[in-house]
Amino acid sequence: MATKTSNYSPPVDQLLSYGDCREIKEMPDYPAKFRFSEEHIPDLIRMATDPEIAWADSESLEVWANIHAWRALGQLHAEAAIEPLISLFWNAEDDDWLIEEMPTVFGNIGTAATPALTAYFQKKSNHLYPRVTAAACLTKIAQKFSEVRLECITILAEQLDASAGNHPGINGFWSTI
Image (cartoon, rainbow, N blue to C red; front, side):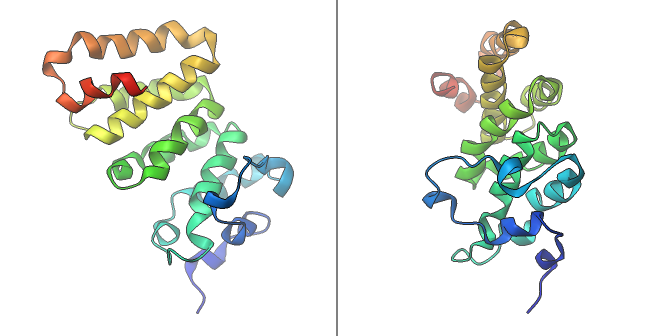
């Protein structure tokens, strides 16, 4: 039976059967391997945020396509993907892959993601794991880009200064980022 996920154009559609991320030992260069370019970013964003893929049969290769799309968007430095990818953070409580992958993805997208990640991280009404994911993304950006290192450190340090008003879990996660 054809699903909405069959509505992806080449070469993006190749990610639907590319492989199980647990079995891929080295991070592929997605733009080179699949010949992705800027023109593929809208379709990759759609795939990266497609709930039908996220909830596909867990034994299928299709279920991994979201993660492959996240990675490709990061490698393409796709600034257009910043807000759509941040919109996935709500699911960090239930998705270990999101928590693990997003710092690398946003580290690859680069410094343009700093304002949106900061706003998300500073919003106390956002849940614990999504906020920690945003903090981990800011940390990765600070590690990769010296020009925003001090800004990111200041953002994170401000939360430490406000530790009395933080969710206890936020304060406890500082040693992990």
